[in-house]
Picture 1 (tube, one colour):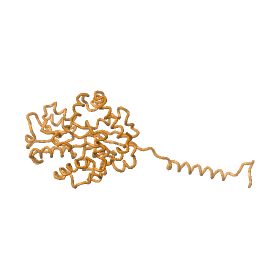
Picture 2: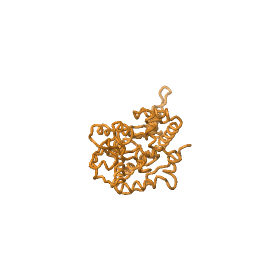
Picture 3: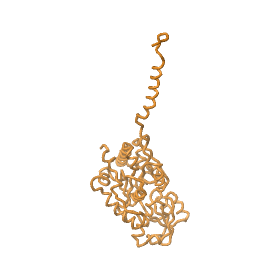
Picture 4: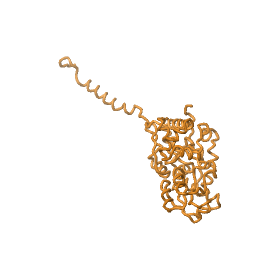
Length: 330
């Protein structure tokens, strides 16, 4: 082999360089890519606030969970349909609607059970739902408002044709009520409190339908499959925030009241209209061989089918995903 000045030919060196280039190109494909944040959508609702409290306390790192707030539940549903978010705080009836559309939402947590927090409010002087005959009732475009109104009417011997439904987002209702554009509204806090300040009266609340209005955290099945650790981070942060709320309600209420634009005392008073299930309750509600949410969901589903709020029945067990909660460290 011929050499020049004792140096070897350049071909082996070129081969080595080529191998290094190929290795450099292959390595990124072999390296593990970091998980993208789990995007969770919420609307302005007192039951969602422990999520933001968890973030405020440092229990929800933004690299794992990103909270996105929308002005109404309808906007949250739209964002989920458009895949702008991976999961959301959603009511059980709304979840049934998405599942019927083939959107594959999966319940990983029961956030709260309404016990007076969802209401139908009317003008001063009105005393019962029967006073709404022929009146204009503001209802959010999502399924929950329609469900609450249908139940309130049915329990008072009325039907949807007895009122004029005005489709209106929840954040727009207080202003419309004050201006006299509507006579009543299906609403919840903080909008409930705003309307009560302008003389509204409570015609119906969810204590009349115990266990029927349930709020959940649901995540798309494909996202759960890809990002199980992020779902566990979300759950761990939630329970740490709920624990803090129980240990120091004054400070927790103050923090959450700021976001709800109320005082801490007002927020805690509104929270009394909800029951927040513990981890053990959640395990019974969505896990095990006989999840407690199933019979509750069946009753709700029957009511929705009868009111034509759902096109066809669903198998409730298929929308429950207890694995992230069951595998969460104690």
